[in-house]
Length: 200
Image 1 (spheres, rainbow, N blue to C red):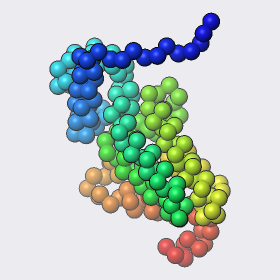
Image 2 (tube, rainbow, N blue to C red; image 1 turned 30 degrees about the horizontal axis):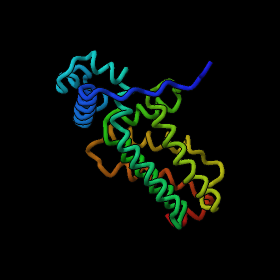
Image 3 (cartoon, rainbow, N blue to C red; image 1 turned 180 degrees about the vertical axis):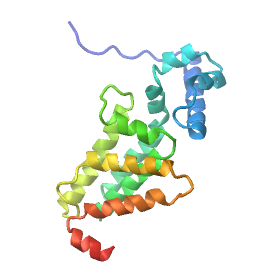
């Protein structure tokens, strides 16, 4: 018996239009209200019923994952560019800063990504896995160059970036908070902490 997966059938034109409208309205609602925006309202503004939304996106995490694919693609592209940078540690720090910015774009995204890191059943797990793989390559390169401590893990770094984005989300009156926290945290990355302290 064959175990090959059945290819997904292409969407009908009307189904594709509904899918695209739902994504557009979800992106707008998440930006304005956060990722806990009402799914019923998203469906209504897209001109469909809530049942149609759930046929396309079985749960909130699936909708979040679809909304964030464009930003995820940009982060993955940037990681490939930075993998050729002359300064591996600087490249890693720049990419982590981009992750913080991405996680802070929608209120609730940082929390969702933190939860997905420990939940393999979450629809956001694929997003987290892609980020983890991209970041691990940059981290390994920085560690191989001797500029980053060998005991640093990509999982810890991604949890830190999400925690920083979450902290910044709770302090909207301080737009520079995320950058300050990231720089403060990453001082501990360097292979020679004493040297890093002297240059700080």
